Length: 247
Ligand SMILES: [Ca+2]
Ligand SMILES: [Ca+2]
Image 1: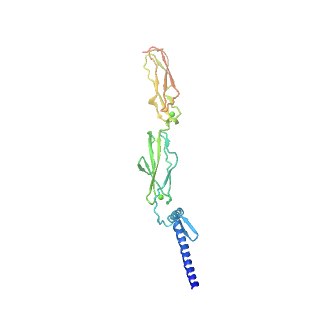
Image 2: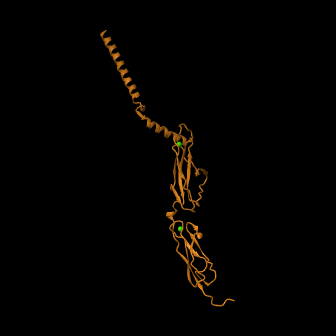
Image 3: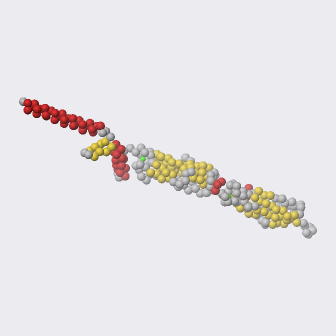
């Protein structure tokens, strides 16, 4: 009997030990809640997410089956200067943007000039102004992103125009007129590399006194919008006496 009792006790204690060991294992798996294990291979939550994200990209590249919701908008990078500055009258060519997305590839973008959709950015550079070019991209899950470029027309003109205008006399640089006649100056024209025709802004200094014999100098000066002064142009006017009696 004592042997049996001993055997029963041993069986009982063996079951208890096995139960404890099972409980330990069970508890361990529950306790290590940030790991998922098959056999001796375990991964944590971050690794699992990376695995799923990677699998999602691969599946989309194939049959296009979307199993995971994409909530990340595309990334738009503006190519070239931002802000971009362009002188008055110069042709503007927009460098566009590049679009990347966490899921989709080869996404295009739409372009807006000052809020108005445009297929090609056609900037009016005849007027000094600041414009906004917007690039808008939407991925296949409907997430939208926008990036903008600021374009300043005429903003850099003061610093970049260092070339003075050029004055051209109309008519001869030396003229002769009879005393007492009316002097009509033929004038001059002026052009500038940046401002164009600035003839109207020429300042003429005309000291000719037709009633008085002598040599007079008519002077022409002009400056461009950036303050560059043209080389002065001049004309000599000789007021001479009548040598033959008028009939
Ligand atoms: Ca996306
Ligand atoms: Ca100039």
